[in-house]
Length: 266
Image (tube, rainbow, N blue to C red; front, side, top):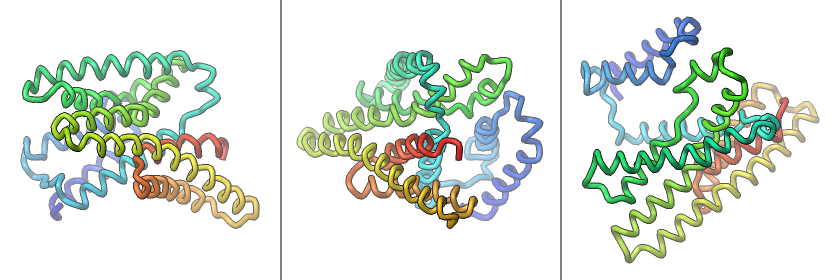
């Protein structure tokens, strides 16, 4: 990233922030605004932005962002409200998302006929989960029933973590199709990814919560650092899961879900 690109992005973030409250009730949500910004000034537009997704710093930034998004979304899910209104989120996740993946697979195969059906399924699964931020005008609108808004929030918080194992399994099978000799190793890799990830996330959250309570009960913990320690647990869950062969992103999601429940009200 060169200096001109950095200046453009910083100015746009600052400028959008100045009008963020006015735009909060408009259809122009922050994600849509940044997409439009990229289209206007990126390679397809004016060509002023020079970002190489292959750069190491971009890869690290993207991973950190995904870890914190998964952890943050999961930690905000209210388990008690979820239990009362479980039917609608379950239908969204159990029926709506598989149908979305299936339709995405068919559309992907039609648009890119050179892909195999398994590769098209990977594409459909990757594109299926969306974040509620894209529909912020809906989920924050008081005119929309609370039940619907809660369901959309729950679905958007859970869909990433739920679809990730499906993406891994489909990608594994697609790789096995391309390299039959690697089938055993890839199957073992996929199994570790979807089992060790949740387990590590659960352990990190439970132990981290106990240590946080132990320190807070003795008055040793500053409120600001309490929040920072939560973010540190997200990164710890990711790193520990990757270290033992699990999926770090699933671990971050499960850690956020568990820690959010255990620390509810703090």
